[in-house]
Image (cartoon, protein in one colour):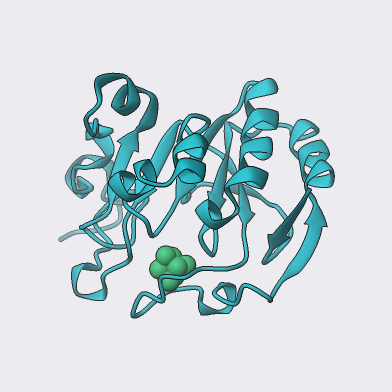
Length: 183
Ligand code: SF4
């Protein structure tokens, strides 16, 4: 099985989910959100085709990573291949976050996408909406997107959010004023 990727695995990301993560940049996205940060990943013929087994091996060799993040592009468009990557990550004790322009509800209506959900721990769903862009939110580009605990959502047949990441960032407690500042 092959997967079309936009880039090599990116190690040590701290902005694509909780902890230190390895990002899988998939190639191909049907959503064309206005203001997309990564338009070069839209073309379904772009990037490079790679054996899934190669990426699986790379994932199994990772050190010092909390998890993998499926991003792109839209990884959901390559659900079968992504499932294999999720399995590899779980096998070595890493969790899986997945970014998609589809909503959770849309994914449930497509059998392949629904199957992928069974292997994803956290889903960041929905298109990027430029008018709702914010730098004060965790791990998302725009406020409409949701950070979803997938296993709880499937278990309870309702969307269960990861509440701590749905709050705006609280700079008052995290930013320490340097001692040389007088204002
Ligand atoms: S879903 Fe993501 S990659 Fe696709 S167009 Fe929207 S922002 Fe860009």
